[in-house]
Length: 120
Image 1 (cartoon, rainbow, N blue to C red):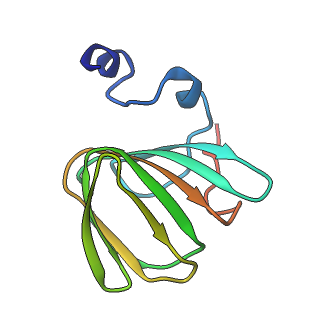
Image 2: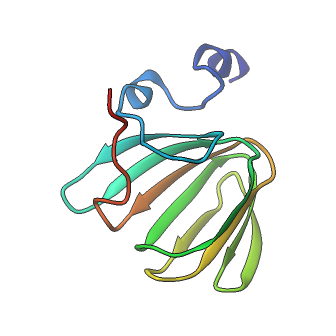
């Protein structure tokens, strides 16, 4: 796995995912590749230990931790999530996150307009 990670620029995602459009995101240390559907979006995230993402809310979101460790607070309930853990954030639920290590997550967003692709 380590040789693959080096080959894939430190991400667990293969070229077939890294060839997807990157998302336009303002947070330094956050990178994501967008798989766009008619009614949903899937984003394959690489998130460095950037500190705290402040409380916010948006459309419903389901996620799976591929690797790493993060602290996620959903509606005042805080839990540490690690490889193999999944989470669900209902629409409008206030949530925040702290990325404790380099984290790789796959998130599905109910809103097909949640993220846009970077302009070339």
